[in-house]
Length: 395
Image (cartoon, rainbow, N blue to C red; front, top):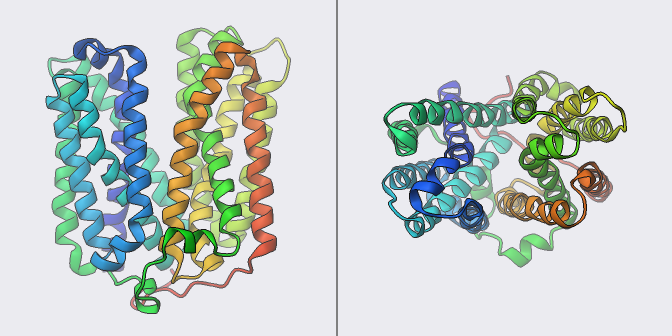
């Protein structure tokens, strides 16, 4: 039963990753058909991010009241409904309206499942969980590309993804008897308020660290191609290929880190990840004639990012207690979404009005901030091993 539920959770994270790279793949065609400017995608993504922040902050209350399984099933149902809604959107304002349930559903899945796996499974499963998210982000552009080159168009791409998600909704509802009641419910009946969560010892360091990590990851994702093309003079085709390897680097890195996570531990994995990120940034910034260093640098940054996110999440119950973990993971997710939403546009202003060549320096600032905040957290809290739920066992 444990293995069956874990398979369901992995499938849920593939589903979570599927829509994340879908909008970017479809937008060059969508904005023309909807009569919206190219820059309007930013408005849609910000609405989605706002929804994820709200549902992340509400995750503690919702999971305590309804349980992780039901929250996950309903959240995926919301995202599936949003995907089918996107496919029928005939105007930009409709897209913005549908983006609300999409964001609420995505944040609900993210916070609830991350906490459940952190409480009930070993760290390698957290790494592989986020590896499966990467699989979703890699697969969906291929689905959209096939539909754009065929007769279905971008609407067909969204419908196919929605069908996949509706199938998963059926699986999730069937799996509800498999879900264990979270340990936090057994230890504390009252959900923490946001001020109470923020006052927990060490939480502030963790939130700034997660914000910094998300800034590095999202900025690299969004600006790698432009930096390589505009500053390094790499052809657009070659730059796009190597920028896509950033996603593959994260996915492959999380697969590999799962095999060593038990031996190294969450804190060591974070330190190693930050170190690899810095090496990648140095490669990007090296003032050499060849493009190879910069191209390889983005792949290395992706590999460095791979273990950081899962390790931060997995360490949350031991750092802050199982009774507080859902509330803390909720604000961690909110902090991550804020970094993802606002830092790439901030660098966009720097690129436009100052110099796009400052990208390595911008990323280095947040990499250093990430390291400082996680080390301050390590000095502030003493981790306590989180007990696994009854019926679960370390494999």
